[in-house]
Length: 122
Image (cartoon, rainbow, N blue to C red; front, side):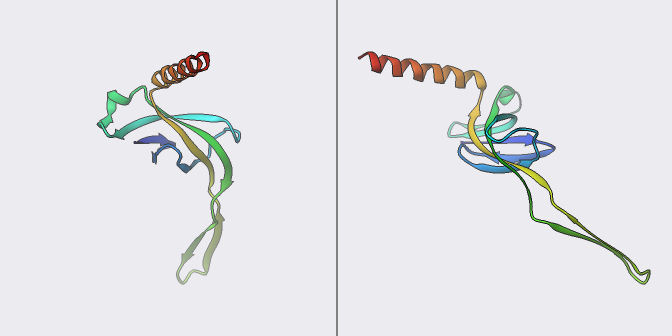
């Protein structure tokens, strides 16, 4: 199962357990963030649009950092005009923990807790 989600005008493919570099987020390391889903694909088929309007990708922030430096060099021939500049793009690294509708996840976790309590009672 995978989902396509959007963050900062870019789209990313997410599978549970994947670690993804996304655009810089204002979130501390260890916090949970969620993103709106555009498309979900699983063994049942592909869902998009209104079918996934309430679905979210939930992820945990792993780290904040900067990418490798890129060199921006502007040059105009025969004019002795040169400009060298470097840039390091900031990013946030996230680990995908869940994909799907938030209400369905809550119901599933409640059902698992109830089953665990029933097993403890036996």
